[in-house]
Image (cartoon, rainbow, N blue to C red; front, side):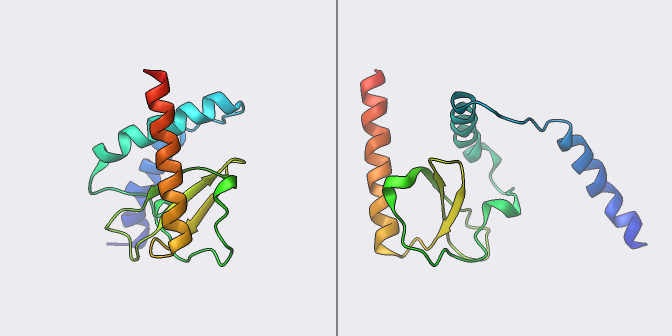
Length: 120
């Protein structure tokens, strides 16, 4: 089998997924999409995108005041990681064993729980 024959299914998949791509301009829509991503994430067990894995960790200190949300990477990634979303929409990979990372995860979880309680 030629390399081009093997690559064809991936190109078809990329083209199909590319038609689903959207540009999100306003903050509320972006936040809604992030919430939807978190809800569907557990349903996709066994499948992850390479962008959902950390190949390296940030060398900078995690400043939780700039973080809006986070998720723990899949166990199928080559190394464990936590991906934080900054308030400006950037993604930052961090080492889950770092005490600052663990503190920030706890703080964001508490804020999320408080918001959920206030909505009820």
